[in-house]
Length: 503
Ligand code: PFF
View 1 (tube, rainbow, N blue to C red):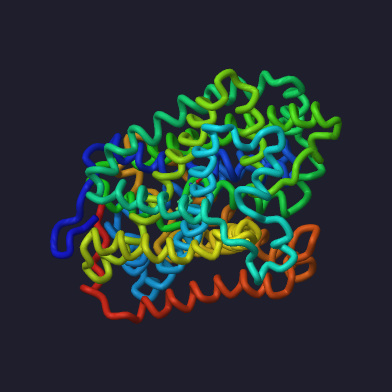
View 2: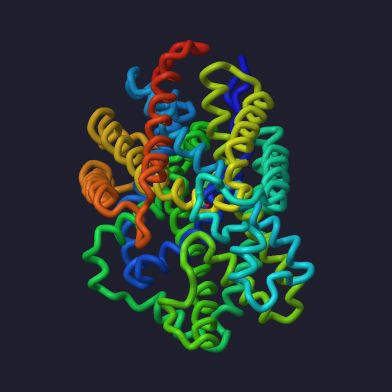
């Protein structure tokens, strides 16, 4: 959002920034990812770990990223480079992790676009599970031969192309259009979600699903995997560790209430996920009631969960075609402002570094992400998507967040950053923030990362065990991100880093 030679663009109003940041945070992560990660990690216990993660890491990191973007007025690579001249590469790692997430995120948007279309005929019929896995994504048997990728799914491909065109058009003119688009993309989905929550919790058998969701099995809290899933879901959901919030805050005017905004965005996002969970678990209870099996066994979990449970609710609503259409449009509008926030973040990094025009940056980033998403439009796409998602979230985001806490907490100084953000805000953050940034978050993340890496090495992938080539593939992407990041730090840029601004 900087012109090649011009002044940095700013948000039209504070409200535009808050809405854009909420729009980035609230996305498929709340309605598609949160429920299945929660389902896989024991329901109620996960919800507790999630809220602890939100307070001890999510909101403090949001404040950190806002402070970093605001003080350096740069997207992640320049921001990190201004904190320490040798750390620009680390900003590129954050940007790279976000970019990879965006490539598969658009594929989920494509599934939503396909379902919008299928809503007209309620094409999923009585067996939404079979419809999703066999007809929409063509997963049947493909995972047995994942390298062959399975059938090409034209519907998923067309949906992916449409999603990318829509994403790029939404940000064609930078902060000015984004500031307006987000009024629709934040407020409309909320209104529709309320209808789904009410229907989800009133379905017959819903109570069993809600019990699974809300009753914590405390012994689950002894499993590091549950905490890792919860903390990384918090990061994913708040869009922290993706380079997004740093870039968005870099467009803020000088006086901006960073602390209050971080609290509004953090709680708004968590509440949306929590309430969305009521709808999904209500529907799972209903499904268990129909099929006579416990909620914990009722569906094949994983990223397909939402595409099986929501159609179930939709078929049970009056005027199901209309609600189907509304619901999948809601998912698309939730997703679009998350996806374009990431394109903005990567584009801002290229504009900062090379002085590219807004249009050139957006088209390059969007075009590349579209091409990289194409392999996921084949039959084994969801399988690969799941692998990349796990590696990017559990390892990629965790590494970025860990690095951020160490760089700001110890090198820049957490007290110095706290003083900076408080100087801008009506509402101050207390010293507990230093403890979160310097001790709690890095300690928890380091512990979780170590146990996760050890667990991956011993029993790489869930129950089925990750095939060795898949395991290597996950690591390869991460290693590539680091290599490219080092290369980009060395690449010649437009100008030397500038000093940090004072509050
Ligand atoms: N916070 C977003 C969500 O919860 O859906 C995560 C996200 C994913 C943001 C992909 C941006 C993105 F490109």
